[in-house]
Length: 288
Image (cartoon, rainbow, N blue to C red; front, side, top):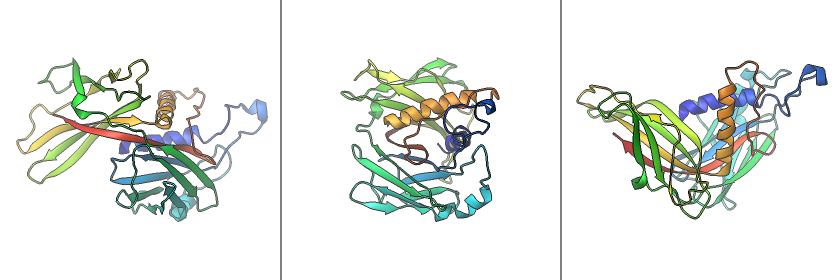
């Protein structure tokens, strides 16, 4: 998911650099702008490390130097709480704006509500909360339907489906991550990631649901004998915040290359800022 987060970062800065409706200079004479914090936090019981990311806010008007933010963002205070235990996240040593805590020190569980509080180095505050969905997709129900290419072809596309978690409203996302495993060195290299969001179980409760678009699961024609090329497939059962945020994000991404597009205001549940705090459970399987 790292590559997606990099793109999300750039889209956040564009979409939230201006607050309010799209305005013209003729209407106001001044472009309204905001330097409120931009925050993302995605929590899952299956993650070994929980992270919260603060992004540099670039207002459409005025000055807000990146260098100052870069030097001081680590002085911000970021906490997570389950209502009983409150923990302070530590700044990552290499990734600017990323705060983290080991799952060993703060357990995230399905069905529980978690609270985020942020106090930035320059005195701004933001908060949010989310409830982790209940239920994990049964990995034995995940199946693949070939829609282009063939099993021996390098370029093959598949629809991915699974059995819906019954008796509740569900929102899903699918991530595919290619791994090139070195069987001699016992190491794995991630080559690329793909994802699809915005899947729900409307009128499909307890039945088979899946992707409407196919995912390209390519493999080398002649891999070395000591190399194993596989795809990790993650099916996420997400909350409504995750669903709404990525739905708007997809629209913003489509408009990104059109300079005449009206800025898309991304969904946010961050009080005192912009961004999203969301939860999900994760089912992981492998496609070889």
